[in-house]
Length: 274
Image (tube, rainbow, N blue to C red; front, side, top):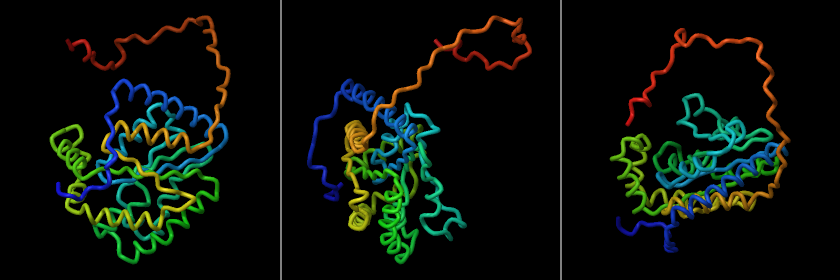
């Protein structure tokens, strides 16, 4: 794959599966604690996941929300803007997805599309890109000043590992949907994406909202590191759950269940398995 690699010089041994799974469960339990603190105190959290295609963003998000309430923690993964949305202020369609009190929003790609894929693929003009770099720090400072906890993560993957993951997806019918022509074209525009990312960092890596880089050639290590960093960066506290007790069932009033013959039951496919 040539020499077009990002800096992945700090090699580590792969985590043993049992070690990974034990730490993953521990961190997920802490995420539930974070969720309850957010809900009890009316906090608002925005977590941005950015990086190259196949860098592992989706896998990290999936593990984060696994045990969280979908009413509290929601994933925001917007499609391409409509014709109407293209006429709006660029940040406008993202604003409506920001959290209210007691909510967490996880952006699987975000307004930073303009700093990356739109810039490289020519989906925005040079003027629109310049305006984005000027307005983005102002926009994020406004979010933070209003009390939103904002965390930004860049998942960094080497070109060799990205190519390996793309090749795997091509032959996997369960994951082939993850590939698009734009994804594949990113292989031939590696350096263009690198320059766009570097320029984006210069303008948007601000004290109020720093970029946190996650080395993601090892997906398991990346998930653990990212989740641990997120938890350690927020001063949440334990919230005692309400004291709940199962009530006793009242005595029967003579109800009889509807005859099964009148119901449209799902066939027992499981019984046919060996």
